[in-house]
Length: 306
Ligand SMILES: Cc1cc2nc3c(=O)[nH]c(=O)nc-3n(C[C@H](O)[C@H](O)[C@H](O)COP(=O)(O)OP(=O)(O)OC[C@H]3O[C@@H](n4cnc5c(N)ncnc54)[C@H](O)[C@@H]3O)c2cc1C
Image (cartoon, rainbow, N blue to C red; front, side, top):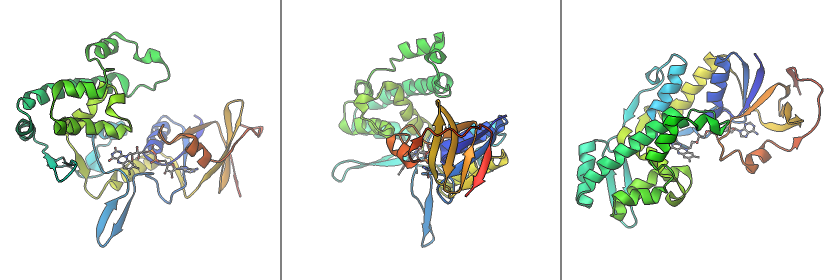
């Protein structure tokens, strides 16, 4: 067992903290906000609750898998409703399009816009489902420490057969001609922060999430997700320190020796950063302050309150 600290109590930090605590480690999670959840946050006004960050609940199976790892299920924490229509698209001008969650109704919407597109949608979504399953079974849950994790017959065959590296925009245009349908099919990958021309067609798995699985909403707001993840972390014995800002990280020979917050110095064995890759950029590193190379002579855990 080692003692380790997780910086950041968003969904990533909470997930890592719970998993590491379950594996038997002593885990401290440090977050500068007054409560955990990170970008999942909300505020209330005039009796209404507003989500400040995420509002699209896709891939419920991913959440369920997390809950199951701790012997729980999503309905232990919140009531999840599938939305119908799933969402509404606003095109340029006054054009809008309701996207029904029912598949037959969706075929009708497509067919009205472009003749023959219902059959094309069926083919597109069948392919998207294969990509989703390939990703979930062989790609997403690997720790990505080495390319060798992905070198096995099934994954390589799946990658080649499903042409997952073809660009997403070309992939969509093989199936649809109408601009409105193309925009509808391309929009989910915008969540990845890149243009469809720069995204591989593997990510039609997002269309599977949007159109095969559907869009959901936890009653009581997205904050329910943060509360559920926090509860699991606490049940696993994670010590949560809110309102604490990490100000510097001391590193020697590539080893993190001590992190300093505005409340304490923590000497420790390991440090985990609970930020997404996109936020773990120069900006985030600046946020944790200057990284110094000061040796402190111990790797045992000690807390020095200031
Ligand atoms: C407006 C918006 C809408 C979004 N919509 C969706 C959506 O609909 N569906 C969806 O799935 N995703 C959505 N996302 C993305 C999703 O919210 C994020 O990917 C996810 O919440 C990131 O979680 P995280 O734990 O990686 O990081 P974060 O939630 O950013 O957590 C990082 C934590 O680290 C803390 N921290 C930072 N610096 C320090 C420091 N020096 N000391 C201590 N603590 C520190 C921060 O306060 C924060 O609590 C949206 C994001 C935003 C911003």
